[in-house]
Length: 295
Image 1: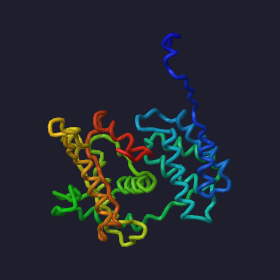
Image 2 (image 1 turned 180 degrees about the vertical axis):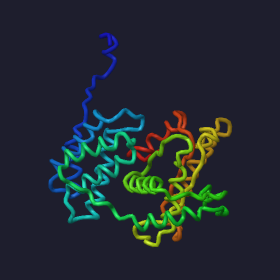
Image 3 (image 1 turned 30 degrees about the vertical axis):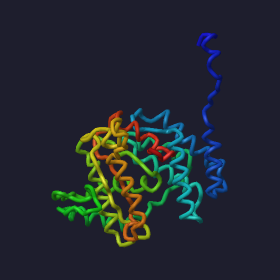
Image 4 (image 1 turned 180 degrees about the horizontal axis):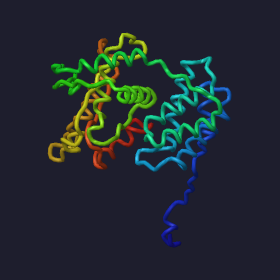
């Protein structure tokens, strides 16, 4: 900037955050004893991945990815107190990252993690109860009548889905991602079973007998491209000076009101924006998707 213009601005300096230090402090707070080495390995795995893996639009190896891994590691530490800490962090890295990688990048990422965590084998988590339930509901996803509580959390046509290994694997990955993130995006080509994965997981979790691990799910969905942006979020009427609430805002309000209902308080509530992503409506969701959790 020219000197005469620079004088009008306040000088400021920016720096790259020290991911290793942030990770170390978070891991210590979750109860890890060997937090320093684990934090270095965690950050190094993301750094090498960003350099060596292919460039995809949905890949993210920044602070959000680090935060998600740390949250997952903290949950695993609480559930498996006696397990080796290296295995817990490695499992957290895999749970958060593997669902978003393409087939070509999966062996590369596994090679990176196996080099950093030498000789570590992550035991497969036991989701047999959930898998059996999803296999059962795949055959039963038939016509249902709507309930007053749901917007489109029901079937209007027969949906006889084949419970293939790939579909069930994606459902399990979606479940693992839902447990560590408060919001997420499922991206892919048209007709690649994105909505089907959500619905199979929703009905599968709702039909599991083990309610301590898998709570019932109530999914409310809308197509954001079928309505205007004012109808999604709401708008201020300049003539009447009234605020008109949008459909998305009313769904959030409906979910919070369910917390007072004893029958619905234990259910997971999912609000799904099921449609094409464009810059117009998704831009307003940025603060909802990150840690601000505010619209």
